[in-house]
Image 1: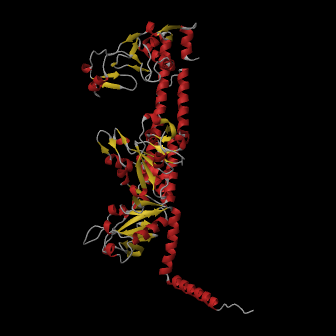
Image 2: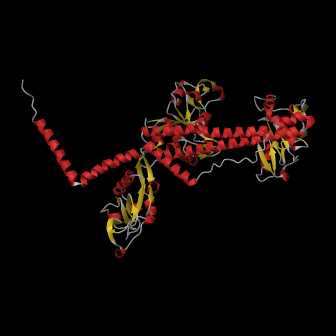
Image 3: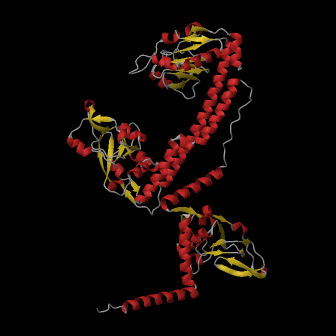
Length: 614
């Protein structure tokens, strides 16, 4: 039997009396204060909170509040206008005089009233008048409301149970909200990454890709009948629009319809608003509609090309880059405004349609993960739900369990960064076939292990002793054992490039401090990087005029377009075969002779093949 049931059986076995609120609690009056005065005295550092109905709450200093009736005891505030609701508050506060509050001698009794009223909030909202405009309840609605009034010990037990339930629910909601926020931030991060292109992608001004036109301006008598009409709020609230999203109607002429018709692929931008942050939001039409126009507070961008996938445009115009462009280029007098000519100057990256589609596929997947709890957090929700049910059962049986210890969800930040970068690389592999990487991301730098030995101190032996351009000597000991890529650190050859500056080594060897030493995960990545570095100009990374030097910092800044693993293997195998044919006379010349012999035999047979006379 629960503690609550024991108390009920002991203290009120035959039931409890129902009483009117006004017969049990003391009603408190508010403070006469105008909206203008509230704005004037609003002070974030004020010690008194002022409630003004709905979500309007300010802080103010007591000396600035006129005719203040300050409540300094726990009380339940009745929010009687707008959003009908109840607030339990214990710190000093006041409220506008069209509202009221209740208190009592016992804090527990006040908190008990709060829970009873919250449990019956629908009753009070149904009793409100003015539902078509501003809902409001009258004083008698609460004054005459009857509630069960059990003994104080029973009230205390109920309050304790519900307080703990509230705390657990708040913790669960906060954790899931934080998780969803993290997923959303992750999605935005990857969206911005995927839509940030290097110079290899064609960039075109929007004026070359779209025709811009302002929308339809009509009086209120024209609305509610006619053809589908895209409103400002439709554009503001949707990144993409479907037929079912367009619910408004407007009456317009055939000429207006012809000029302002919206079709699949059209992009709509919000044109004017109170603040710069609210202009330039876009929505892309994804369905063809026989008849549909758009409003005068938006701009339509109609594609002049087939190079763009509509869904790709939807993501591009939601990026931080485009939002920054809009807010920094829009005009502002009494209102913020944006023109088609301003948007036309924005330069958009236009990759091939297949790359656009892969970007859309990736971002659609991320978006569905962010928006659907059943996809994004099933394990997390299940774990938290079990945790919640456990504590609920504990509380309802009133077993002493001690302090609740929250699960430690902190992770190693460095590991998070590495995981994040690997995910970015994989996304680039999927979308573009390659990923721009630096050497420190794909290889381990072993420079700290190398040791120079002067010629007089070397003992002759079997192990190669490497310098900037290859083998310098052979010594009787080694410091490296395995496969490594050496890259020249200094010397005239960095500029002259008489011999390769990157070369692979294997086995046991010694390396001095004139060559960087890199260890890769696979032979193919190592060989690909070797070939790439030997084929590009590195002058911008080289310092020193008299003695050219490629220091480790500059080495780490070299960006390498690394293909996905299967493509890297394919490229290396092809180039290795070419290299072998070109450098190994035992295979190269015989292969050339064989090819020429086959070519000779082919043409010989052709030339000596005649049609026989019948």
